[in-house]
Amino acid sequence: MTEYNILLDAQKMPDAWYNVTPDLPAPMKPPLHPVTHQPLKADDLSAIFAMSLIEQEMSTQPAISIPGEVMDIYQLYRPTPLRRAYRLEKMLDTPARIFYKNESVTPSGSHKINTSIAQAYFNKKEGVNELTTETGAGQWGTALAIACSMLDMKCTVYMVRVSFEQKPYRRVLMQTYGADVVSSPSDTTDNGRAFQAKFPDTTGSLGMAISEAVEVAAKSGGRAKYSLGSVLNHVLLHQTVIGLEAKAQLEQVGEEPDVVIGCCGGGSNFAGISFPFVPMKKKGKNIDFIAVEPTACPTLTRGLYAYDYGDTAHMTPLLLQYTLGHQFVPPGIHAGGLRYHGVAQQVALMVKEGFMRAVACHQNPVFDALQMFAKAEGILAAPESGHAIRVAIDEALKCKESGESKAILFNLSGHGHFDMTAYEAYTNRKLEDYDLDQSIIDAAESVIPKI
Ligand SMILES: Cc1ncc(COP(=O)(O)O)c(C=O)c1O
Image (cartoon, rainbow, N blue to C red; front, side, top):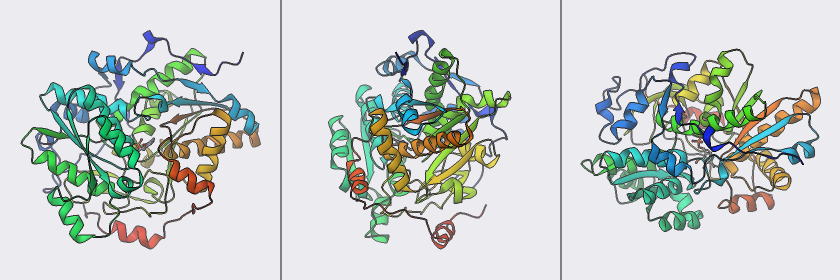
């Protein structure tokens, strides 16, 4: 019988997250204070983040233990399966071996819950009873809503207006877990009211929703803290549980990856699947790490490497990253998620130093890949994950040309059960492939502070 599922023995589950900081190919530049532009101190962040998360953010330790209480919740759904995509390989007639880590089987339907549980836990431990956040398509908001309900905390989610209107069931899902969901920009915050006045017809953006969620936490006097679903070092750290498990699962079947692929929005699932393999590459194994983004939001492939804010209203620290400018709003025609203007500084540094690389895909080829994957493997993946599937297929087809039998690993970051509007648009041939005009990028980047 063909072995599709590579299950990890429970006793081999990682008990510590992998911290890439000491293994980075060059030192990270410090985050800067949003007002003074001076290097940030731990205290500057304490109004919005729990102290233990700030310590993780700045840690140079190679590993950070996963607390027992977090492990207990992880064990509801971890280890997730690593699958060999035999049926896809057969469909492509490729000599490549394709493996995918299936994070779509988590309670929230995506990898985001790996960090939401950890963040809720560390906040709760420090006496915080409410978390505020933003969400775009709703995957992150759902993950935080579940974590807060499990840890008996209040959760307030600022949901980007266009998604709030187009994805009512995502909203209901978050509400079912007890979260308050607010359409952003809203009239519940000073930032939201200012955005409404300045951009009355806006569809909203992650940058605006972040400004609202941060404001609520900053003004709460310590009652509430803010929680971010990607980008920051501690978020990427929590996601390394994905790659650590995948590494152990591959070891069980005597495999090492030649190519590691993840879709890239803020960078957390890409980091999660790829960072634990960094030491292997440093020891000499030739691994091609590929971050995949949409051509409609080409942060890593066409953005500027510069210090920029994480949000529209300049509430967050400045991080050195690739950015399209913190006021960038992706075109409404784009259906595939991954809409953030910036990216994690650790991922940006890896790409800048040439240790990892990035490619951008058009949305129709992404949906072609999603449909092939659904037909071959039976799983309806999230449009975001479709970017990774597209490039895994492209790499497998290159192997067909060259006759090489590479081991290709990608992260299936989530399922697409709430993305049927996008699938419908694809089926009805309503999706347009879209290259951003350079003038739009130049205009968006003109707001980046000169540092
Ligand atoms: C299923 C899925 N994959 C990937 C992403 C991209 O985020 P990140 O780059 O942080 O993994 C998202 C973001 O919301 C998502 O919902």
